[in-house]
Length: 188
Ligand code: SF4
Image (cartoon, rainbow, N blue to C red; front, side, top):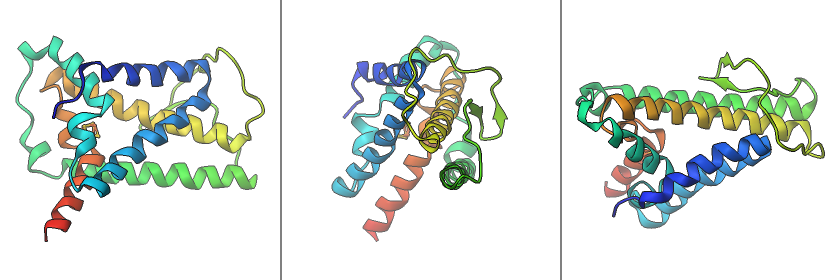
């Protein structure tokens, strides 16, 4: 099964909605939960094989430079790169959860800007077409953190798609690593 060609529109829509209002970033939670729900239900990578909007975007963008693309680095396929990315994902998720709890408890101020790779702040306010001031500060914080994580991984995937094969990111994507480990454990 191949990803539908137009699924990339959902990825663009997701990042576009963030400019309408950052709280739409929480829709990304669905994107994170669905692959795992389908994995546990089907015992295979149903999401990756047919429904991932990000893979669709990488395919779309990677095709434009496919003439110049290089072979996927072997340490992506056989080396530790996927475990490094999984580590980044776990650290990133832990920081999101811990910092959100701290904002909720009043110990920290909410983050109201984007960050690249957890630590690099992106200067300037993100334009917001309309405001939703009725959301609690911890929800706003969670939204910026979540959008930052999605932005970081999508950017990394796009860069890889431009230089290597379109779906090179899929070889080190944390969801793929978790899925592969789960499928292997069910076969045992
Ligand atoms: S490996 Fe990651 S980016 Fe690739 S299809 Fe699966 S969830 Fe999407």
